[in-house]
Amino acid sequence: MPPASRTRRDWATARPWKPLIEEGQDTLTAHAWVGVRGMPARGGQPDLPLEEFARATAYMARAAGGDWKDPDARMLHEIEEEIEDRLESLREGKEAKK
Image (spheres, helix red, strand yellow):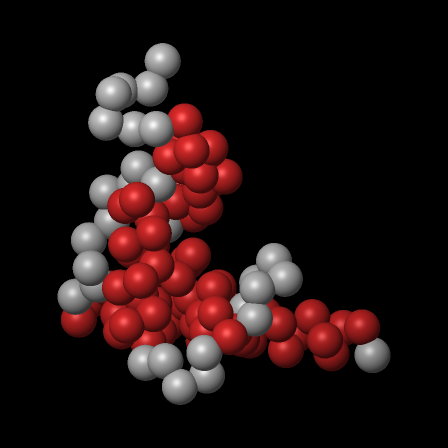
């Protein structure tokens, strides 16, 4: 049974986030930034700075039970590296389909 501080709705929201949180903060944030699982890149907000997007992602992960911190300079660097890796992977996938 969930703790009293969590409502049934909170637990229903947290369940789908569990495997996403387990991907890691840099990976999930980078993939969401690029666009993944039917979600548009940058959450559909092309003018949104990466730092704000990463903070929002961390907030949602915390709300779902994760222990993510707001990204510091090191985490932002890791996210940027993962973004580059993800974009390269997507480019390679498109070229393989040609």
